Image (tube, rainbow over all chains, first blue to last red; front, side, top):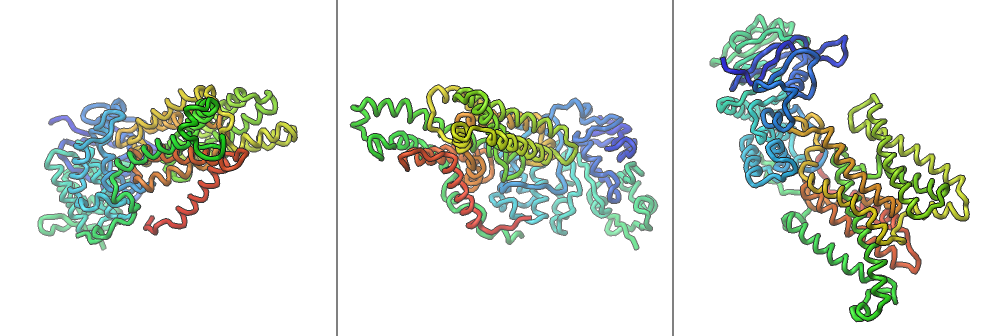
Length: 257
Length: 346
């Protein structure tokens, strides 16, 4: 098989030596794949993303991005290959929406260069993709929580990454925006962008992902295709709760009590 | 689909809606030039008012006054305003906090302590006082930096703020002690005047001694103006955008503090410029530092020049510049707070 875009080899991490948060995490993500990390609160999902980003350094094990050890990638190179959509973000000043999305162009600009016409165009297109074109000149502080989350997605799109990391991307979104985002992300994966996202909602995982990693107490419980892993047995084990998986219109849905 | 988008744009001042930001900056630059020329001509020689063209061409004393006294003083006022404002923009963005200013992190109190120390123990000649103020300003920054590394509490911003508060308090305690032991007839007034700030004794020599470092710092900040936005984001986000937050932050802190320390060393304490001017600039040009930084530099230059004009012309004696900048700065600040448009914030 071709080289994975992202690979974790026996990665462990923690803040205190006695309390590992991630233990022996091992997986590959290939080009165009959409992988969901599903697990209960506190399972280490966000930590997994921070390690992927290179923001946290693994205790042991190796992380490779496009075949290159993550540690050796210069910051700008890293920023061009991979973008992060955080769950939420403190925004200290009244930037306009377009100014904020434009920040995603940073890794593509030579040091000390100002964004040019092309960068503005790319940022405006990214805003269009999340459906917020009309808001580009509004203050970002006046947007709703869901709209802000979409702005963060647009900024990551403006980064034109090969790997997109999303931390609970649908947590603040209403149903229609959830649908729009899932549609957009599927379209991106069709164009060869790999996606790794965390969620605690099984429906979002089954609607978007083709691969599923179940995470529990810092360990990968299961890792495989959606069909292999999205089962009553595995989800019941994951959530310690009887869960039954049924199929509605070809999509798997998890039901609990 | 998004009915909210049909609302009028309320958050930006009306001014900006009719004026593109680049044209606004151009107009501001011309205004600064005009005020510079007028400031050079205004004064109390031979009578309070403007020097006429005839007098300037005929009166040798007026020429010397203009070139040897007013010009270096005016240029320093301009540089002081630009530096404090630019440093203010940098600090507010770096600390994601609109209420910090370049003097914090122990810089201002360090400079004050250094100046008082020199006045009491080293004879207080201008050059020695200037050097001592600059050295202690940098010492203040250095100690804050080391302390912030030692603190085991909170994130980057909180640690630096805490360290800065502690170092400032230590220096101000030291300053209090120095004032207490100072000779009340000679040294204490001198310390007090230094603390009030002013450009009365400014010469070409003093200006030239701080010019290189001020220009260097301002150049670095100016070149970084767009990337400053990235540093205002939380650390993990700026990291994900390909920034090396640690390195770039320290570069900018030094680029902001070194010129500030240099200018404080000749001007004494000139407060509020670095706090209030960046606010006004953001109001007028938007938050993007690509534009708010040049706007703040121009506005800061204008504000400080005008304050200094008043300082030297309003009364027969000199009014301390720091008193005027604080007075007008605080009044503007209050006005901004009172007339702030209501907006939704988290």
